[in-house]
Length: 358
Image 1 (cartoon, rainbow, N blue to C red):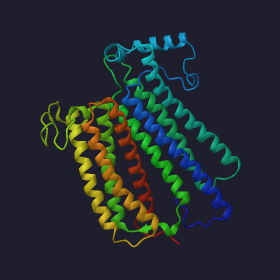
Image 2: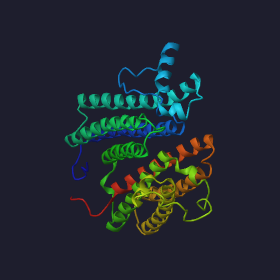
Image 3: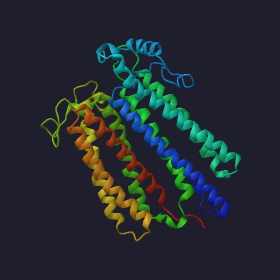
Image 4: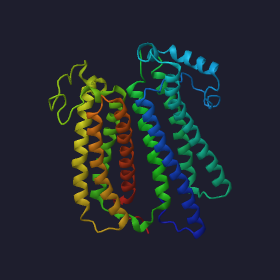
């Protein structure tokens, strides 16, 4: 999606800016969708709608009879039988709202993309280099919808009270992949050649940081899905120890890295500390670069955001047993993670290993 060697007319540049603005609206909508998903998870609302009806499920129940019928469907789930058995109809309506809102926002995103695509295509705003990325965006969006329903289904089987943590993490990572791709596409239409920074070591260092961050995001998903924060709501120790007991309690041993809440908790904390160290090192190394304003803003933002994220992570863990605070802190932690990801994506685009061809 890099077209820097190509020279664009003023009209083409204006069209590229318009397409980029539309894509950035999509980025904002994806961020909001992930945050709504976080609220849906933290309020235990994700299994309140037991069917997948992309078209006919657009409207919520519109009368008392419809609400009762929807509640009866939920009562069949093991989550209701063993977790929410005390729920009244009004309490069910609350969790139904968040799952319905989550799905409705996804539909709205699809419409914004579809109608925007039709408009820009009809107005001949796309150049040839945009068509393939647009097709990829369509495919990624459709895949994300399928993964979302696959995740919900994982919690609607007997003896399951919540969605599976692996399925939840897959849904989360796929959403962040869509977010990153959309942002990269938009950046490629806006960034000028003179804003690039040529520095192979910085680029390789950034790629290492990003790889560690992806692992951190995966384990963040596992933390959320297994409710691992409540297993050790203490800091700096983990239940009084820096290396907690029971980290190898599951058999075979490899299962501990996937299914053991305390092991996952330990890894998530460790990766957080490692990220702070790595980003601090990159920030110090990049200070030697005499570059333009955009790069400097991004490098400082990266350092500040990772420190803020560390503090939010600590506060989230320490308040894991407080349901109201956990929703606020958990969603904030998720939001800052996405901001950190977007800064990394922007820096990876700007910092290059070698100069572009003239």
